[in-house]
Length: 425
Image (cartoon, rainbow, N blue to C red):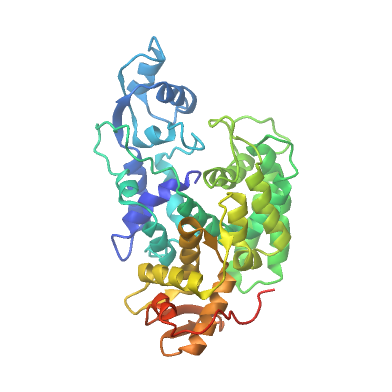
């Protein structure tokens, strides 16, 4: 689960059916990326094959022999490799690791579930998955659908590269699912000597896991929570058993860290001087983003009040903070048109997330989820017949239905001034 770009094909396939079978969905992904194609033996392909495909578990019989016996790096010939290899060898992506093998078919569907993109059990597309597909181009989706034996054109898009909009959505989702661990993990990473390896990062995970487990015991709701907590504790003990071992091969320590470090490389929050090595460096973006997260102290508070500000500073987007109606409501309306269900309802978190992504990447301004929600509450009080909220079983606002174009109402002065209601501070 290293390259987040594989989610593009997985979600597209899931969107074609109301329900999906885990094995069918996962094995389709592996089959799609494992198709064997012929590409020109470029210096980049040659370097990738010799460094990334030397393990016996990677079947590249004729292609590997071709490279090993080629007389010159610049020698022109075709080589047979898998489709994913052609994308992973691209010098313009951030990491050349993350190749899928047949036994990986279970992993990505569950990653999509944990990120809130697919529904658990049916593996059907959730609204956040719909939002992700909405910011994924048709060309990116079709990049995984290549006939076996065909060669890729040089202008073909690389679907493993994430756009800024995709990075922001996945970063928000990653924090929403794994934020408590990333909070402690990032604090430890910022203290490591630079550069650091995956196993050095793995050494700090047991303490992070135990801290999260201890805090989670105070808010246990049922047996499932206890099972997850115990799994964290057991994983911490398993990782610690590797600390005294000579570093040969890959074990729980390396793998526990890699599945968190490599996605951060895709998201632009870590860099690798050697894209083949599991060795990482902290950047200004890393310090700014995780510094803001640590300062917030709470993942929920950070996502509600500081996420887009931290994103703006970390990626140096130069966006301006604006919280007026003329800014927020048209962005909400645009996201609502993309995400609304046949009944007209949209989950509030996904609605405001996509609206915020549109604003910061296309319009040059940003607002936080908490600000946008407070504004929606004010608008609902002003025109209750046009904006309707529903609550979840705990009484929190969960979905919203909008009957008119809010942007038009602002332009027609049907809505009042720029009052936001209670302050977030």
